[in-house]
Picture (cartoon, rainbow, N blue to C red):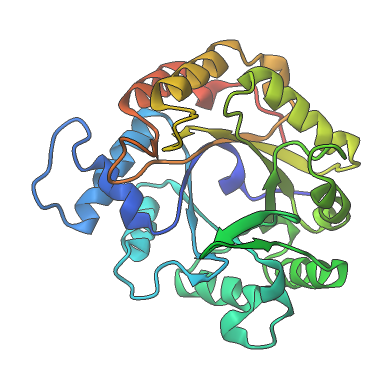
Length: 307
């Protein structure tokens, strides 16, 4: 199976509305006063270029619907800017279980993915699928409970539209039975419909190298034979228990220094989650120190698996 070149190598995620992440870069290197969205895109691309990043993965929709509903959240400007800079624009979205059982096209994730990619003239897509994931909404706990038929229907539909080469799956880091039993049950059977799976290796307080190695191994142990792309952590939390910005800067530094070439050779790419927020203090991602360290590490030159 081939794989879209946009997915390969070194990349970075933007979370939720692009404008929120883009504003974090308004003062990158030189400050801008009342910048336009296009100017923010240019500053973001400057940081991306400094880190030798070749792809930007941005969110199209969440459990509750389209991210850029009003057209004012920076998606169009981001896509246009990335294309002009010859940086791959990779769309992704969180696919919530019950949405794939909804017959209303406006609330069906398959149709949403197709429509939005057509709107922005994008030929690839990454489905974030997290069976068993729990979220709290207005003090009510919701669990992402997948039905095998619904998941197969979603992935078969995406495969039919995009083709396996242009389709990927993002999910939990470690899918050993004692870690994520639901993901281990539901994701491997649909993995062949995509060209890669991207474990979300958010190490928090785990040793970053050890957790990355164990996470990748868990996917192979579960029988997944598609290519793997590592999504690694650059965010910190507002929770007093951490990880703090200082904690995460140390974790990122350790990973950059210690992750061995033998592990890079098992993956076809590595992405950072995520690019940050406008107010990047108590809760944020991708600090200036991280940018400097990542730029110096030249992850674009790592011996990724050849495909």
